[in-house]
Image (cartoon, rainbow, N blue to C red; front, side):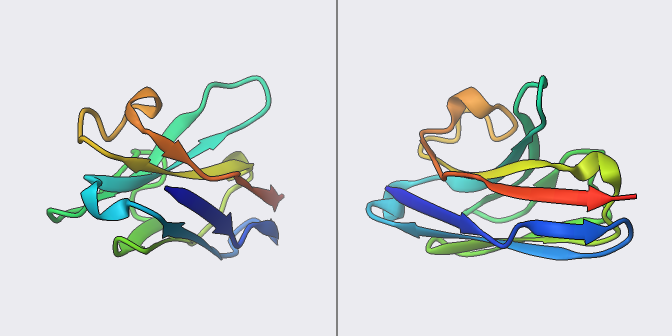
Length: 120
C-alpha cells in the first residue's frame, strides 16, 4: 500500500485547509484510515479516523473543527478554525486489522507527511 498526502501549507489562525491522502495498492483488505500529527519534540498523536464499516472518530482537541471523510482510495481531512497549536506534520495511515484506531503503532502503512503551519 502506498499513501500520498498533500494539501498542507501556511494559514492564519481561524483559516482552513483541506488535506487529502490518496491510497494505492492492496487497500481493499484494510480496516480503515486515520490522520495523525507530530510536532517537534512531541510524540505522534491521533487526530481522526474513519473505519470502512462506518462512523468517524476524532481527538478531543479537533472535535467540531476537523472533519474526516472519503473512501478506500482517498481520504480527506477538512480543517476549519485552525489554531497555532494545530501546527504539525500531518500523516495519513492505513489500519489493516482494526486493532486500535487511536494508536499510531497499530497502523501498518504511512504516508510521507504534509506540513501544516498556523500563524497567530
